[in-house]
Length: 204
Image 1 (tube, rainbow, N blue to C red):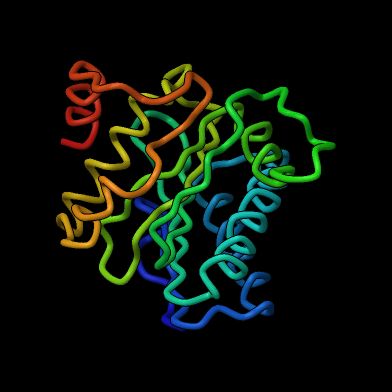
Image 2: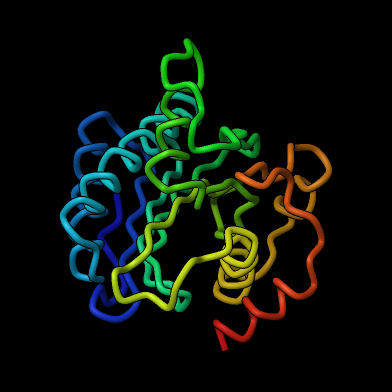
């Protein structure tokens, strides 16, 4: 395990586990809630963040065998706090498309919870971070945010941010043709040049 990096007062924090264990899931939840509180999330939102983080980190433990798991919590200039859970498996989950997804279903119940608590501000995409192959993320708006956050713009911003920080990796480029694309509240995210431009301006 590597220690937390980043300044929680301004950007956020990130922690990586080379071999995630069940006990580390608790530590990951603490990282999400502690950083979220510092970045301005309220008590109710912190409770939701803890539940969603627990679901996504546990999925990484089960489906990616806990290898190369990374959790990052950061302040988004669109007025929300983003939590990303990355791992070394390229196959991406398809999150239920609507807040009213069936929480009693035998499969996908945890991902339906993520969609519900995040109000659809969630998704999955290839990861540009070395040692990881996908990122599954959710976002929660801040009380003093600029207003409603577009999932399309936020998805674009996350990809731009990760590319700028880490650069495209060879395995990510290769994976683009092999794994399912992002499925969100509005369905598959199309090529939206306007959304990308707005996201670029937000990270400038």
